[in-house]
Length: 120
Figure 1 (cartoon, helix red, strand yellow):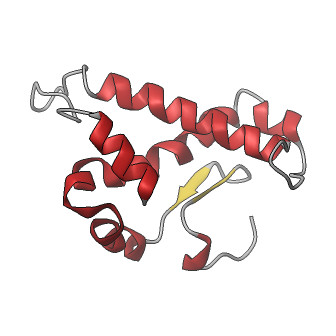
Figure 2 (tube, rainbow, N blue to C red):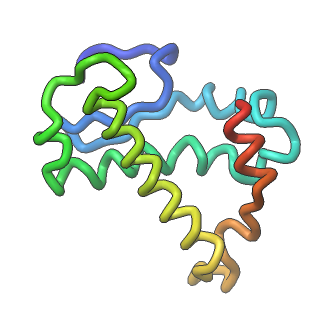
């Protein structure tokens, strides 16, 4: 995927099927999301990158091809689909108990969490 710096932010590389995260980025999340958004901040960042990972083996990324610019570009639509996959995961993470604890990974996902995340 070429050289990348922490300025790029989290990203998924289809060539090696890996999501990359700068650990320092996660240190900034409490400041960006505020106290009410902390429980969902890291999953909010990680989940869409794994949404892109789902797009890779299904061939969606290959069908999109080189990204073009603009609000209606295929790359924007690819990002929105990854966000949708992230939302499906978040919904399930509020209901599915973890084997290790018997509790869901995310105990509650409220409109306030979503609003805080969107404001970040």
